[in-house]
Length: 430
Image (tube, rainbow, N blue to C red; front, side, top):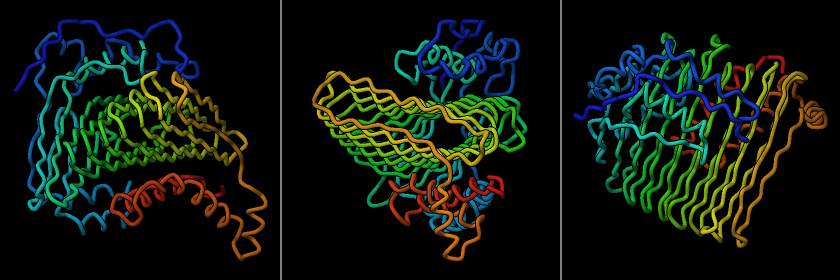
């Protein structure tokens, strides 16, 4: 067991000079007054910083409780998805992250090697060259000085399915966590991360895919609808090494003031990443910054982002494709489409490119609109009511973001059902 010493009794402050990706969201919203900041155990971060921090408490629980833990996710994943999980229990690992602890529920029949540990968290900005991002990482270090590390080495044809529920309880005012997933060479796995809950939280997770590794991820942010004034910061960095393949689906149902920064970094040649994102916002402000950072040649990245907004919700898209000089023969694609379901909903889209080499293929675009009256009329001639037609069009629009997942796979079933749950939160009279 390692112990991490925190020498400073002061927390990082928000830099005062502006940054391009923070022009439309005030970063000070994510820097609480120092005397109010708690740590990952629910204690004062400053008071705790005067002492020695022990790592996360990682505990193995009775595998017989696995079904009970899966059933607790029905409100987010839906009944059908949980039933599908119960049919493949032999490959499931469930990690429940709470205040200062991580409880592990693992199938007795799993063949793959999965290791859990708690290691000191290294301060690093998710977005490249961001002082604000570095200051936020320093804040996270003060509140969560260690990160939970999960190392996966698959065996034979087995694809282990790791599910992480991160601080889902709404009973905590603040939560902080850092999680790292490491997939070994030539291994394969499915990974579902479900986040949400507290009134204020900063959660980060990092994924490392070593050579020839393949990971399918479903990332769900499901805020409590009663938390309309919540403040949430979700961060992710994915590092892909040679010939790694990453398939990603994200379903975001934010409330209050929420920001997501996701950076997929291409560290090895011939690596691939396909991401699909569905955002369903009914209130508040959602700021999404996806980054595709190509450092080496022959990388392939594709992002398909769909945003659906109702009420007075506001969404910001700040996509960035960054291609370094040493990364020729790169293909990078970003596509953002937004559907407004009310006159008061707003979208602000600013896709960005930073390209240094010439021998690349890059495409990006953004479009925003309302429900097509011609489509509604056509469906009405086929016997659909206006409300039924609207719901079908909205669902079809959102479901396109899941096309990169393998059809009828378990993770695809979870994605489709959790998307249905999120869409059900939209006003009935859309």
